[in-house]
Every structure is written in structure tokens, then in C-alpha cells.
Length: 124
Image (cartoon, rainbow, N blue to C red):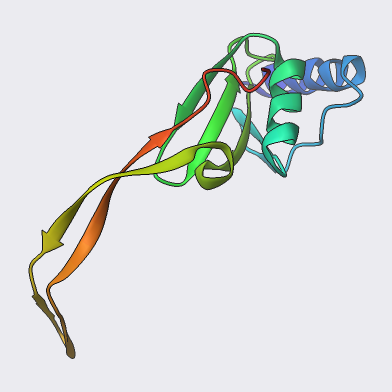
């Protein structure tokens, strides 16, 4: 990205925030990504409403809403811990064999087998 493209993207971002005064300020910004750390499911839903059309993704730690349309060259997203947004469902158990780790032994133990049920829509 050129310096001029970066300046234009910052102006577009400022305009977007001016048009959405209820949107929480960004907590992290890189040359191409802007991330808002939501505080709870309702705040994440509020971000999604401000974003308009967005995509949902999740990983082992976070649930994300990502605005489909870039603002200048920026991708705008909001995140919250998956445990706050999704329901953890234990679907079974598995036995984990004993392991020898340097300095100690991890004994055989049972672990939950889980899946996460995340909402189809944060806005409902």
C-alpha cells in the first residue's frame, strides 16, 4: 500500500466512524486490519449491526464478525471469546494415554469431547 492509499483508507475509516457514532473504537490496527474487542455478546451484535453485511468465523479461542466490505484498504472485524458467544456441548469422552513429559508424568486421564454451537445470527 502506498502512503497515499493509506491516507485515503484512514479518511474512509474516519468517515465510517462518523457515520456510526455508536460503534466502539478499535483496539488494534495494522496496515490492513482493524479489530474491535467486544465486551460481551450484545456488544458484538452491536458491532455486527454497524458493519452491515458480515461473515462469522471462529477458532479455538475467538468468535469473529468480519465486515464484508473493506473500508479503504482496511478489513474491519470485532471479536469476543468463543466461550461468551457459543454454547459448549460435551458429545462424549475419550481416554488420553499416560505421557512422560520431562520432569514429570502426565497420567492417563479422561477428557471431554466437545463441539461448539454458535448462533446463526447475533441479531436475533
